[in-house]
Amino acid sequence: MEKIEIDAYRAQNGVKLSEKSTFEDFGKSDGELRKDLRKIRKELGDFQDTLYAHGKYGVLVCLQGMDTSGKDSLIREVFKDFNARGVVVHSFKVPTPRELKHDYLWRHYVVLPERGKFSVFNRTHYENVLVTRVHPEYILGENIPGIESVSDIDDNFWEKRYEQINNFEKHIAENGTLIFKFYLHLSKEEQRQRLLRRIRLKRKNWKFSPDDLKERQLWDKYQTYYEETLSKTSKDHAPWYVIPADNKKAARVLVASILLESLKMYKDVEEPELDDEIKANLEKFKKQLEKSAE
Image (cartoon, rainbow, N blue to C red; front, side, top):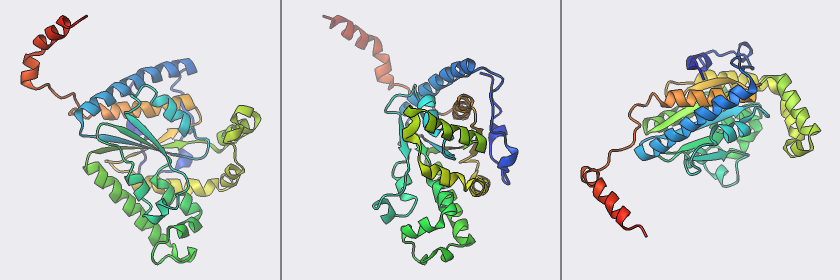
């Protein structure tokens, strides 16, 4: 796989999603893309082994996108070659009663990656400036002091939320969490086709919900708030990448490539040296084991 120009996909201030392509294939067939992914994810898995031995960084991968954008299958395919204990996936649904007893970031903070491991957020803390922005009535369930009705949720409220999220990410980045945020950029027509597929294919029926159609009607609102979110929260320590998602195979290769190329820049991530005394006696230990063979 040729080296990808990472910055071409990085979100900048004032991002306009209508100007971003939703399709990519890198001029390759499906088979070639699958082959590229196999190679990249093997290298990612090897890197995680070294990351674990190094023990100073954790990696947080955030995935956002409209319904059917391919988050689940991307996670399955990109992280397939990881040690099962080296990556943990968290899917954030509607907050539970216990979670609502805490601030909105709490449930995300408690599942941040341990040093040496990857955590993947399938939908993320950004739901709190996306879904709740489209449906501000959901905020009332958080029981925030001073917020008694939807009319109390003004522009200043959202600006503070962006500031809180940026501060949260800055704090964890400064304490050893490497943050990658991917927006899977799906076209409205491709979403329509994928929803139809869920209805037509019996084995996919379980994925379909009438609520998907209700949210689809709010497409333009979501696009507006995604643009604002990407613009306000893409930082050097926590960048957003806009990933063309109409072609799932290419999207997986792109996400995996961005992760691998970015992580390779951390030259300090290497396996620790053995203690000098142990290293000096390796041959002796080897002979002891050889002699003990039955």
